[in-house]
Length: 433
Ligand SMILES: *Cc1c(COP(=O)(O)O)cnc(C)c1O
View 1: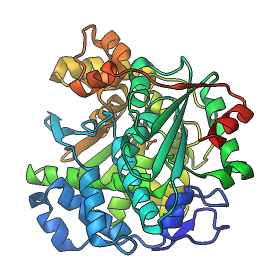
View 2: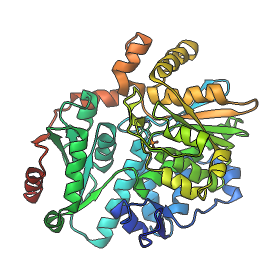
View 3: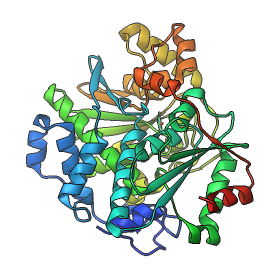
View 4: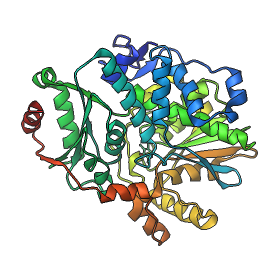
């Protein structure tokens, strides 16, 4: 499969090139040249298949030309070592719980898949070690570090701002050891990102070691997110609820929802999508006005959606041939303030006993407000509420049980290397590795 750049100024890439490079040389995002439909027989029988079986069929449509079947199957089955249940919250509203993976958030799926696919490419080429640099403000670092943990041929360096991530987040990437090194930078998230960018541009460093990135624009991180939309459909079909399905996605960089839109283009019978925003409502405004006006993000309690210029917007435009009308025919929007998010977490908990996290709350509320007669809604519960412990406990006025997986991380001993925010010292450190 060839991958083209959304900016159309870079040469087409193979899957391997797209995965290793991440971003095209013209700063565009890679898109597969063809989106294959899955046969009707697959949809007819989907409710009888396991999550892994469904995911493998979808993976085969994306990657089957480029990765041998046995290898791809192994990657899919290893990636999905946990369930993604659709849990009924109300008569017509289901929560697709994406928080049963190692770091209790949906980024585990893409992180684990990308790590295994990159590992395969490295082994195939007999290449020397590849080094993944990732700057994080919290959750990306944990999903990438845990996804790549123990993958041969890859070393991960997580750069994070000292004192600016929560203790739970910090423990998720500083206690792992093996091929994961945490670098505690005396600076901000932007400083961490600048160090990574400088490293990619430094010729001497790149001659010394092979560097790559693992951010969400990478096709190997974003496409596998389509898997669970198909599985959600299968579960609702089994429950006899899939006829007028509406899928609602709490969105920041729009990678997650774009993967779902790919599913729809492959024939997945979803009636329509809702993209739910926090106060960072750039996409919502685009739907209303046809104007795309990025602006600096503002901090909210659904902080993983604090994005002022969603990177995957370019992919959505490409998918719908730049047509605002076509986009509006399949996607509607919603936007909620912190106050409304708090209100929703509390109300849902009191009415149904279901505890939402602040991101999932945006999804749930948009369904409550937007579902029409005869429709069934599923929202993506993108993280476990205990990951936002202080916020959620503050809202419901009760303590929240911390899942054993999170507690295990808390028991580990933090190991990190202190780093200044100056590039020369970061470079000197890497040159000795
Ligand atoms: C990353 C993230 C999101 C946003 O997903 P996008 O793919 O960037 O739209 C939503 N919720 C949580 C918990 C996240 O970690």
